[in-house]
Each structure stands twice: as C-alpha cells, then as structure tokens.
Length: 300
Ligand SMILES: CC(C)(COP(=O)(O)OP(=O)(O)OC[C@H]1O[C@@H](n2cnc3c(N)ncnc32)[C@H](O)[C@@H]1OP(=O)(O)O)[C@@H](O)C(=O)NCCC(=O)NCCS
Image 1 (cartoon, protein in one colour):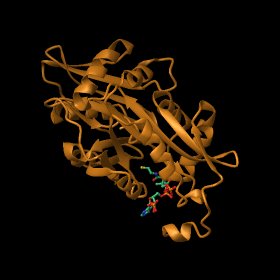
Image 2 (image 1 turned 45 degrees about the vertical axis):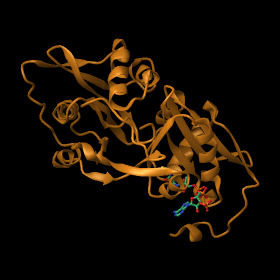
Image 3 (image 1 turned 90 degrees about the vertical axis):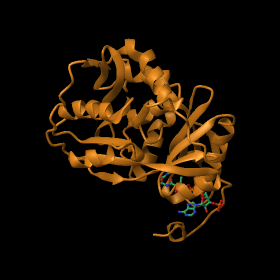
C-alpha cells in the first residue's frame, strides 16, 4: 500500500497537540507499537521511558504519536520509538515530533536505527546512513553448546556492584555514559531486571559482558560489549547455551562479524534496520571495544 492510499483522506495538523510524555501515557504508547506490529511489552516501554524523555502527539485527547530520546551524558544521544498511529500517518505528525526532539538534543551527537518507513523522514532532517543492524532471532532456540574457555578466562555473574565497570566498558565502545541504564538492568527490584548477566575476565581483567533479559516475544541478548569478536562469541554462546527452547533475539551491528555466525547457530536475520547519524559523523570508540549487540534498536 502506498503512502497516498493509506491516507486517502489527508487532514490538517490543526487538531494535533504535542506534549511531554508522562508515565500515564505508557499504556497508550504500548498500543501504538502494537498497532504498527512491533513486539514491545509494556515493561519494555517502561524501561525506555525511565532512561529517557518522550513526547506524545494527541488528537482529541487520544495519543496518536510518540518519540523518545536518551541523553547518555553530555555528548551523545539516541532517539527512537518514533511511531504515528496508522490512521494519522502522512499528516506531518512524525516530522513535528522529530523536530521537537531534535531541539532538545542540540549540542549532542545523535544516532538512531531506522525502519524503511522512518528513513525518508530522518534523511530530510539531516541524518546520514552509515551502516546497519541485523535482527537475528529464533522462535524456539535449538541447543547450543556452552563454549570451552581457555585456562586464563572465567565467567562471572553480574550484579549491582558492577554498574560502574559496565558503564566504563560501554563508554569505551561508544562514548555513551549509560549508568542509569545499567542501574535499572541490574537492580533486582526493577521491572527491567535482567535474567542473566555475564562478565568474561581474562587473567582477572574484564574482557567483555553480555546480558540476557525479557523483551518483546521472548528474550534478547544485549548489550554484548567486548574487546574482540572472539570474546563476543564466547559471551553470546554462553547465554545461548542456557536458552534452548526459548524465543531469543539479538540486534547486532552488521559490520562486526556476529551475523553469519548467528545464522549458522539457527538464528536467521529477519530484519535489517539502518544506522543513521545526525550530520553523518559516526562515533569514535576506543581501540578494540565494540558494542556487538544493542540493548534495543531504539536506545541503541
Ligand atoms: C515513520 C513514521 C513515524 C512517519 O510519521 P508520519 O507522521 O507518517 O510522517 P510525516 O507525515 O511527518 O512525514 C514526514 C516527512 O517524511 C516524508 N515521508 C514519510 N513517509 C515517507 C515514505 N514512505 N516515503 C517517502 N517520504 C516519506 C513525508 O513526505 C514528509 O516529508 P515532507 O514534510 O517534506 O513532505 C510513521 O510512518 C510510522 O509510525 N511508521 C511505523 C513505525 C515506524 O517505522 N517508525 C519509525 C521507526 S525508526
């Protein structure tokens, strides 16, 4: 269906009001993501909202659009969960939400992951494609063997005491300062609390970490942050080895080498969102450290 036929009766934007999102809007926002076929659960929206700020578009008191941003420290921001309800698309609501968000992010470097529907809008607002994500998933994961570790390597379970270490490793991989995110993920009393977090050490030094948590239709493995592809594979395969029979998903950086390997393990690529940077400047990371698998496509 083309944009024109989807909106056979174009209307003006005069009935649309934009305002800051509150926690009370989350059920309506969850309804928006369901309306466009996304798998987010209400707790997935809650985590996103608690780590960032959002705007909603209202028509006659009904939420018809959403967009969120996350300021990760003073220099780096991500944005996502940009949705306009199908009956209101093509009326400028998405553009209005985005331009409002971008005024809040002036002075920071902004990155997003775009669907094919979102890409033209982002391009018009100055975002430039630099690469992509591969969304890999298996509805019912086959058994994956646990990896054999070298004698100098160990896995440790992550806990709240690791927030500052994870924040540092994450910042090495992207520059983003995301202690608020790691606090939420590692707090056992939080609704976003992870199922299993692993730190890989080599000679007692952190070599990377991975997290398995509930998301969407089942479980997601991400972030996976490591100093090498081999270590990322160790961290992912250890999580997969405990996940047989589950719906498991990973949103991996296409260029970093996990994608074909995941396909071989029985998790095919089902979608390929586009990575876009405002003004086209990809972020520089410290030697070796990379974010192999995202927390979510939206938060990046
Ligand atoms: C992407 C989305 C948010 C856009 O919202 P929208 O309100 O329909 O977009 P707008 O009406 O504000 O259009 C904004 C601009 O993008 C252009 N545009 C929008 N969709 C387009 C398309 N499919 N092809 C080409 N241009 C398009 C419009 O022409 C407009 O540009 P203009 O103002 O210069 O004419 C909406 O389609 C949506 O919710 N899609 C499903 C969820 C999704 O994929 N979200 C994006 C996540 S990254």
